[in-house]
Length: 106
Image 1 (cartoon, rainbow, N blue to C red):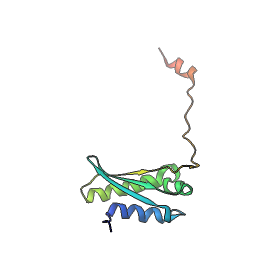
Image 2 (cartoon, rainbow, N blue to C red):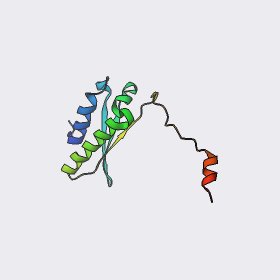
Image 3 (cartoon, rainbow, N blue to C red):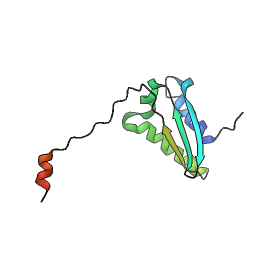
């Protein structure tokens, strides 16, 4: 059996307890010159729970991972794979009022 790393166990524990499909949670760990990269794969229906409102849940998980990494002298990053068929809306882009921009030009 492969050795479990504390950062992988942490992410699995947190995510499995907040999603509706805990059996679909999979965390891959990769180490390179930049540090440790954890890639989280989840069920399509659970993306909102993991990201959270305005990304707050994902940000909190990443912050705690940085603390675990610092304790183990490693840089730990989390990548959340957006599942195919995800219903997340694309980010809205703000429209620029060109009249206002033209007025600002000298």
